[in-house]
Length: 113
Image (cartoon, rainbow, N blue to C red; front, side, top):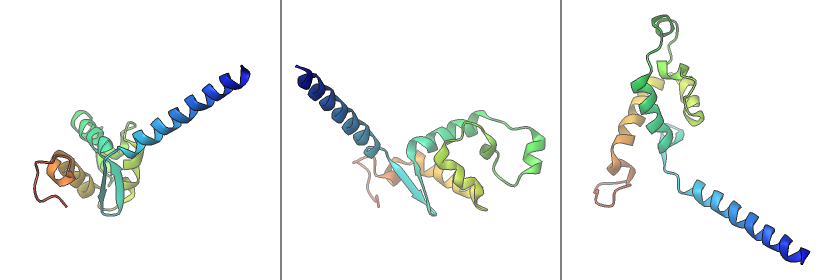
């Protein structure tokens, strides 16, 4: 009886691990200029950039885009802030995320790479 309980628990644990791994493989990633970020992070970037206005003093003191100072910036986007091209990279990622055809998400799109 105890071996059935252990076997059942083991089976549940294996199923849980499989589901977690499966969920991770279904994420859409964007690769741009050596950075790989999740599409959902770029969508969060859009929300952050639209809603957050930093203090004027912060904008003057830092060469980084203001969104780099937002505490809710997704972790996979933070390395971009160290790049001298951070502003243009963020802008490009936002444009790519808005264009389903460039991500080949929509099967009706043509010209996907």
